[in-house]
Amino acid sequence: MTARPSNAHQARLLRLLRDGGPHSRAQLGDRVRLSRSKLGVEVDRLLETGLVVMDGLAASRGGRRSHTVRLSPQLRFLGVDIGATSVDVAVTNAELEVLGHLNEPVDVRQGPVAVFERVLAMVDALRDGGTAQGFDGAGIGVPGPVRFPEGVPVAPPIMPGWDGFPVREALGQELGCPVLVDNDVNLMALGEQQAGVARSARDFLCVKIGTGIGCGVVVGGEVHRGATGSAGDIGHIQVDPQGRRCACGNRGCLEAHFSGAALARDASAAAREGRSPELAGRLAASGELTAVDVAAAAAAGDEFALDLIREGGARTGQVIATLVSFFNPGLVVIGGGVTGLGHTLLASLRTQVYRRSLPLATGNLPIVLGELGQVAGVTGAARLISDHLFSVD
Image (cartoon, rainbow, N blue to C red; front, side):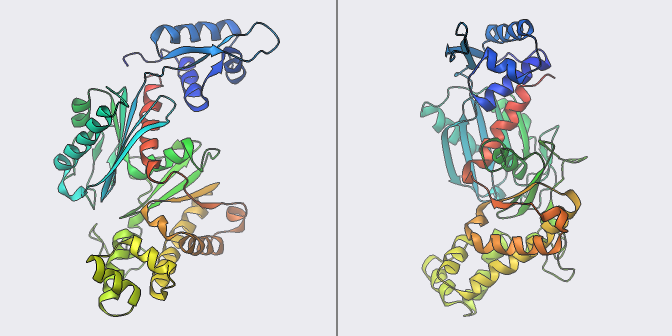
């Protein structure tokens, strides 16, 4: 796609069609403050660019029936969500419906060259599957701080070898389309806002608990990245001054005490020391433990696993309670791989937030699990690049 909207009216119309699907001209007129003639001019210009197409006849509103318009069905966006231990790649249409999705285990510590070789192989597999020949834009998420305008990771604690790597430039050359890069939790927040539990929220927090911990902050419907792109890096808030050493070099960070990596470490230690027969059996069977094993052990009634979840949820809840008091969000979404711990984790989080934050901030505050699971990040990545393309420079 080479065409872009030429003014703010066209950009607004494109986003309405993306988020709401096909509309008649009359329906579009109900949503935007344009005269009928001005609206007609802008829609006709979008039709000429090929960004939108006619899509059958609209339902009658008492006069002559008009055609509906929709975004071109030829438009394709690519979403890539790079995590610490796996990568998700998906193709969406212009309305951000996932047309094809692949997930593979990938260790981000292998470095950007090796990881992007796998990403591009997954992209080729999706192309071969017929979901897309080329892409109109791509959004990329990485599990660390990103200098957003340049699309460059900056000193990411769990991504050795990625500091300063030109992700946006390198993938843009390989894919031949515009590329934007952001922190993975920001993309999860965008995904849940687009098609998940946060569809009606304007001010909310999206906390991702995976190998690490991060928080997407959405203010007035827009992701807040801060002055340099590091807003929401809550995994490195200190929760214990005498606590464990963190990958960032500091001591007592939340992420060092409760995350997928921390759970695996503590569960393995308990299994070897005989404090959990359930975890010991799982370690003997597989040779290693993950947060999935902790969840399974907890479901089987293992008290040590349940205590791990409750303690970690309480620490995380304390941090979230501080954020709630400061930001006063209308919703808190919990996502990421560790959400497999389920309602034991959620109950512990909620208890801390509701106990520690003022009633005015929590009196009508839902704290819920995300709805989109593995496709939250790739959906948010497609939303990110479509927001860029459906805007006026």
